[in-house]
Image (tube, rainbow, N blue to C red; front, side, top):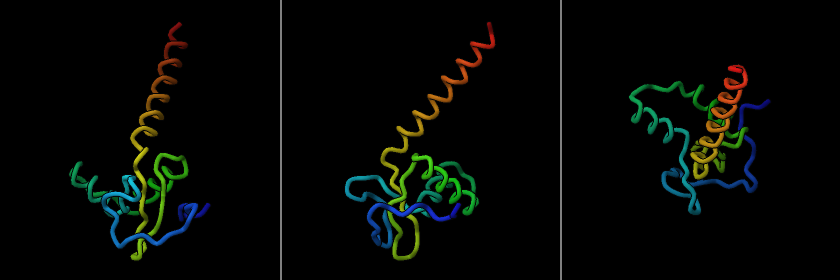
Length: 105
């Protein structure tokens, strides 16, 4: 498996920064996501681990990689991420509860 995300359907070169929207979608670079998470949680992220996590989330359709900036930063579309991640968590919780209830009998 490659360490690079899959190619977007129409390769483009994005702006030097992408901090608001891309055609109405919520997008951010890896560095912007790192900064936001570090500010919100008050902890330091390992850049390579976080990038691996984003790539895995992309492979599983929780985030969408859309382009690379001129500086080589990945740009991620997060528009549907809360719904996708919420659905996955809800499904996992239901599966766990069903398993627990089945074993309780």
